[in-house]
Structures are given as C-alpha cells and as structure tokens.
Length: 306
Image (cartoon, rainbow, N blue to C red):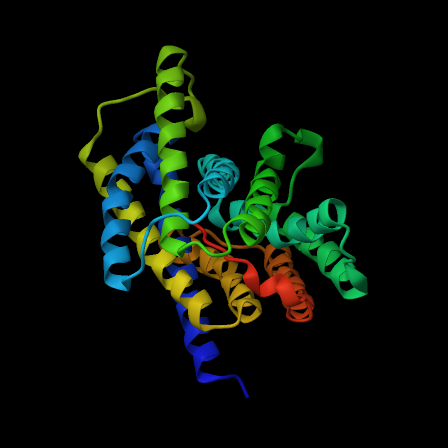
C-alpha cells in the first residue's frame, strides 16, 4: 500500500502538472502580443517577488550552498526552457511538452556516456519507448523537416542535462533558490536578446522586437508568472515529502492535461496516434521510475519545471 505521504505528494504533482499545462496553453496568446524575450523579461519581473514571498511562507533560507554549481545549472536548464517556450509559439503544448519530457531519457543516456553507469535492460527499453512515444506525439513531417521539428527534443536534452547536474552540483539547495536561479538566468538572457532583436528584428515569436506592452500582454504574463510560482511550490513540496520516483511518474500527467486543456479551451482534438504516444511515454516513465528506485543516488535529484 502506498504511504499517505506518497499519496499527498502525487496529488501535489498532479496539481502542478494541471496548472503548468493550463498556463502553457496561453503562450500562443502571448505570442500575438509580444515576442519571446519581452515575455520572459516581464515574466521574471513578476515571478521573483512571488518566489520571495513563497520562500518566506515555507520558512527556508535562500542563500545558495554552491554558487558556481547553481549558476551553471541555472544556465543549462534555462536554455532548455527557452527552447521549450520558443516551441510553444508554434506548436501545441502537448507536442512541445513531449520533447521536454524526453528529459529523463536524455538523463539516462548522458549518465551512461558521462558517468559510465550501466543502464540495464529495463532502462534501455524505457529509453527506446520514451523516444518512440515522443515521436508519436510530435509527429514530425520528414518531408518538410525543419529546425523547428527538433526544438522540443533539444529542449529535453538541455533540461535533462540540467536535472542530472542538480544531483551533482545542487543537491543541498533550497528548491525555491533553484527556481530563482532559473528565473534570473532567463530574465538576464531575455534582456540581452531583447536588445538584439530590437536592433535586428524579425517576424517570428523568437525574433520579435520590443513593443509597447498591452493590457492583455501584462495580464497574460502575470497569469503565467503566478501559475509557475504556484506550480513550483507544489512540486517542491511533492519532492520534499514523497518518493522522487513516484512523483516523477505523476509529473507525466502534464501531457494528458495539456491535451485535455487544448480540447476544452480551443476545441483542439488530439488524434489517436498522439494518445497512443502519451500512453507509451507513461509506460516509459514507470519503467524509468522502477530503475531509479533501484539506484541509490537517484533520490538526490530535484526536478523543477518553470
């Protein structure tokens, strides 16, 4: 029988996934008002004070334990998240999320190549299934293959690398400190890139220059920041009280919620192949969780999606 703490942690993970998948459905609406970099600058400005309040409520110190490790981890994870948000300007949330949730699979592969750890038969099956499921969700058109087709998987690669390094560089950090580090990295990158695209503007979400913020843009951005902070707090609490292997599996509900929200909000149907891909990804997640429970240092990892 699962412990009461694991049941509560699973509930927190489900709530966090429902919130994140809901707010991410509105990134395409943000793209109608402003570019990626302006969105990230304003999102950081709104989120940081909220995170400070959340930290006070949780009663945990924000001072970093490993400054260099925190900076390195924040930069790597930020690259993955920025690629993910750039994908959201052109792809449905479930498809972009499929790439991001390939992160555990990248972690498994990187662990083999960087740390010479054996993956095992179950781990190999989980990796293969995960990538197959991600491709079924992404459904790339190979005849019209572009860089955009690889963006979600690239997001998963960088995000997964950052999560893996969390165990080695930031295992003792406060989860809110980790979140603040990512927001600061994204905000600084946003300022730099916003200046660049304002000088050399383009027409895509990723290259739109500075525009006068509209009321709709500000409301959507505050909404995004608030939802992200609430979700971060929930998932941090989930990992604090529950088994990481259990919580990680319930985070995969993000893909299911993303499809459900898209249907409810925009009347966007998910085809049978995509639903089959979600099922396969869930099976892959269960297998990865099983292998993690057999790995002593797996529990040192901390995952935060912003």
